[in-house]
Length: 549
Image 1 (cartoon, rainbow, N blue to C red):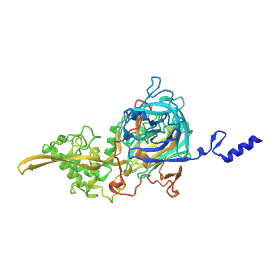
Image 2 (image 1 turned 180 degrees about the vertical axis):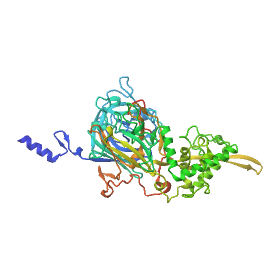
Image 3 (image 1 turned 120 degrees about the vertical axis):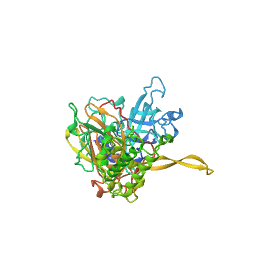
Image 4 (image 1 turned 90 degrees about the vertical axis):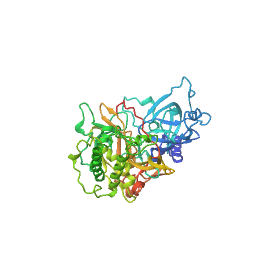
């Protein structure tokens, strides 16, 4: 009887701890996601007393990685990476079986799209929001790196998919979600302000089963431009090969800045986007016409060896200005045509119809995909402050399905989500006369705001799931992505709802905006101000493209 009374008393005084079960931890909670343009970070507390770090929230990996002070003190990590963790003589809960460079220590070499990290497994407490885990030999200290990153990088909080039964965890190191017994979570980003990482969130009704075995993945059935009913040009279910589970696959990854896919398919998408965007279609007609006229006059061959690389008339940092020799007339013609496109809905080519037959053979010189990229690069010329890119350009519709066709979903992504802006260096060549007599060539360099599609090339072919795409941060600006690790198979639900905000560990979201289909990236601004600006090089998540989905 006394024992029962003691139990009731403990339950009344300490309701969060009864019979070894943390009841308070069962409640849903959240943590703010700080926007760094190319990625988002979440505050993570490590050690006793806790040391605070901003770790990249990454659904493409499972590991908890934090920068070790050994890395900075040895000169392997730059100071600009930010705060570093020190366990010895600093954290009473820290355990490390060997020194960081002992021959007995098992160092792990982790590969990411942006380079490699060498890490050493140690033991300590890790806390995210109201959720805590004791990471026994599963907290990874970064002691060396070969990352192609600039700016802050204190580590990674992996939120990857749990391994399928019988499937070994990569590096056999369990992640935070597994150690903390967190089954459901959600992620969404905001254009301005903090996004939200929800933990122990309610299960979603319309969820799609994850395909593959290693990553959060979906059956990918192509992209329609302008209307969900328009035909896709790649990844159609009809293109599925014998023995394949899906024609293509797609991985939603919060740790990758862009949307990545095979170059051939991205160019096909750009072609389709140009054909279905009135301004681009008219601009392309004008460019082909001008190029034919230049060709008759002995103009330059404008074919690009890298159609997804640099633009035709914008010179990036480090490019030799001499490479522009002979381009003067061509550049002027191209710029004149692009300026003509700023006339909005009117025909920028004087009402003269484009005769496709008369330009036969010239489409290999400049494709609609190249025109599409050129037109976006010159967005300063035609995107007015009172113009919404969502009204100007067609939306993209991503066709997805869950494992074994249990659920399908078409994801609409708006132009203000998949178009980004950046700054490049433009070189202007002028000839001036010194003392009014001697001609001197002057190179003037200026910075110019340009727009670009948020896509990058990545070849990831698989045997069972075909070509695999990565849907990076744009997806999380458009949708709140819910994950369920406990479902069989694990599931994802992509919901168009307000991202909300996290206050004192609790999610605040206006009920009037729930499930309204509004983009989480909506800013209410127009022109260039409505676009996300990248100030650092894009980040690519951790993927070994030799492995299956």
